[in-house]
Image (cartoon, rainbow, N blue to C red; front, side, top):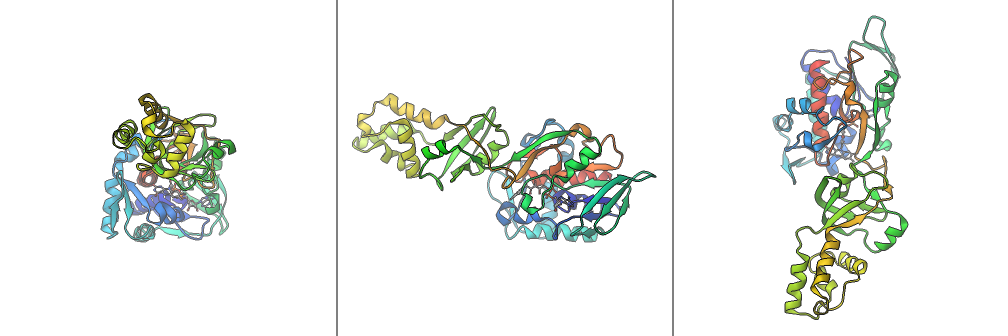
Length: 388
Ligand SMILES: Cc1cc2nc3c(=O)[nH]c(=O)nc-3n(C[C@H](O)[C@H](O)[C@H](O)COP(=O)(O)OP(=O)(O)OC[C@H]3O[C@@H](n4cnc5c(N)ncnc54)[C@H](O)[C@@H]3O)c2cc1C
């Protein structure tokens, strides 16, 4: 069998198929395997999330991911990591990272591949894929053609073209007449129009805890003001749900009882300015921004209680309409992809093309930020590796 793409999903698929005794060839156009693993999680790879379940994924069919996720769990991957003696830690919210380096995960996968007898061909371009006369596939490559009874497409999505992301999987899907769910950058910083940016003057670099919301989706994490708009985990998460023209809502400093803090300040020292009191509980620049936006400032003693409530409400329901996103250049993942209706959820096989499989990010299953996307890559790769 041939797997195109030596990323997270392709390598896991190769290991599983090789262990089953299949002759496996993995082809990649890059010089090195697992490049996204290498740069992931700030170089430490957030390799899974112990809480990963179907609720953490976006897809037109939210049930599709259930089977693969249930049959290869975060615990299964963690067992593999521990068998290789790789030290790890939980950072926050169930996110597991390497203590040392993401390269440990790549080395682990390569060792497993070698032990499973998998052949890896790097720096190899795929020039054509055709159905072979007697069934199976003929794959044309820059190093000559090869034949395979089963073909797995594991070439990921469109994010970070600089790293060789090509949209190849979608072209192959189209070649075989498969439906695609529209793709868009996800887990991506959002941009603001110049006028809104002007209102946020002085804010780039300021980070604050927030609940970012869009529709029913809500994420409570840090957010960051940037020179072009908003970023940080809360914004990346909500970017997967946001659409052009929509607002997002922000609840800034959700643990802060603004009314109580201002009332207490009034009782102890009424001459303090509202901005000064707020700045004791949040970055000074954010306090300045809130006061500017609401027009509520001056000595706390001079501000009526109902205006404290208005200020708290402003911080609870801050609406922002992003102008756009930073796009595939910085997006961590691609939303959409091969329509899951085309695939068997147990094997990732294309229902209408025997022997053809799609796995990983190429499929219309997209995880939240926090180790979920790798868990999907491992689980879908494992599912195809057991069947192909
Ligand atoms: C900066 C960054 C940080 C991230 N951090 C995390 C994290 O910490 N945790 C997490 O869960 N997820 C993270 N992600 C997301 C995660 O990296 C992806 O979801 C995951 O790598 C998808 O795995 P995949 O195997 O489907 O695709 P990829 O890992 O993208 O692998 C695809 C492979 O196919 C090859 N390929 C592409 N086109 C061709 C072609 N035409 N011919 C031959 N080969 C081709 C590529 O070279 C690559 O090796 C991060 C993403 C980015 C960009």
